[in-house]
Image (cartoon, rainbow, N blue to C red; front, side):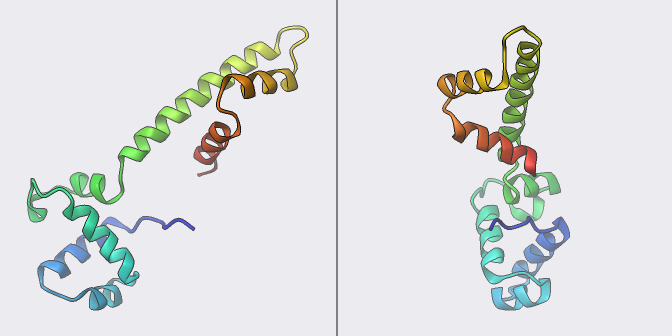
Length: 125
């Protein structure tokens, strides 16, 4: 099961506790999340050491901690899906075209169910 991202306030609290030298176990108790989650977020933020953590804006922290590049990837998939649905809707207005026919064409032209399930996962969330 995937983790829900923690709130920005919790992330800032973790960073402040780390700055104060508080152990991870105590951070987990105070913030109310697991030790592994704290380790994960600290590792994600520490990957890029070009800017000191104290100087980083909330947007920079969010980009690192929440991996916002995956959102851009999801947006591209969503655009592809919308284009596909638009094209499919126009094809279905033609005489003799059925959903089953379009489905078979889709399976042969795309990578099949894997792509469809990826796109479905974007819509599901």
